[in-house]
Image (cartoon, rainbow, N blue to C red; front, side, top):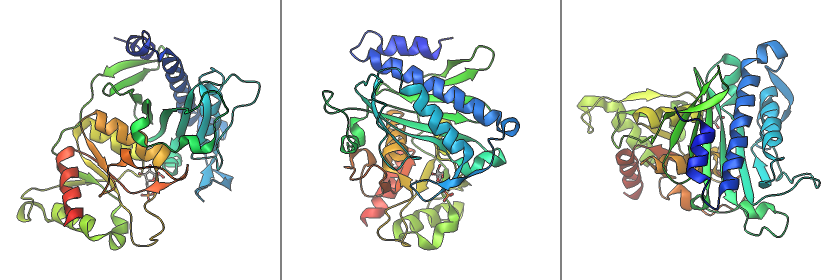
Length: 329
Ligand code: P6P
């Protein structure tokens, strides 16, 4: 069975992006450390909340901060990172001056779904990699404001019943499972692809009264079941952990929706574009799925802020096409 390091060597070793392969190995090490910190939190006192909020105004868990520190610590030393953006940091993270900078911009959510971590429900880490536009100068925050189509790699770790790493470098999607006996991520899910059809959707139904009409119509039709216009019964899931939802969709199809709602017209959605929507959209499209705001392909959006939020509807292509058609009528 192929290890993550062997796979990266095969996929990138003989290309002009061997340095990206080294960086991805550092991401893999960071995810192993984060998974270990989560698994041992009950013994180390790392459970529970810190007394701080992040830029999103969310109460930070101690593990949010620990995961952020681990993600930075593992990736900043290798000489491949130009700068970083994290859900947990308001400003762009510039590398300490004594460290060698590389050509890759890293954007990540170090612990996604962390509201689940203290109740032992799956959480994850999400990362996105872009090329720095000018490698002859220190990176600036505006360098991160590239459409998702510019990503050179994206991936997530899922800390669930098993710890997995799922990755794309633009050549399909591959899944790796951590072998605790060796500490290696092993290629267990090659060439992952999303079923174009599905009868399963994921949305936080408690927000129903705030949804816009096309979303309300789509969900109502799913809920109407066999007797309704879809002529089929549908199933619903909501884990409140995007990584877990996207992984389920990769494994058995489905639709994940976090639409904009009419509570705050200035707020186009909850999820963040640079380190949640874009990496997950890259992965989903590489696996044959689709990802939209309802009216625009997410990967084509031009970001205007490093913590910009966006509506997200992604998954099985035929269902996403239906949702987009409802936004046109
Ligand atoms: P809600 C986690 O905070 C997250 O960013 C995603 O992982 C998840 O899908 C969503 O928010 C959950 O949001 O409003 O249901 O708690």
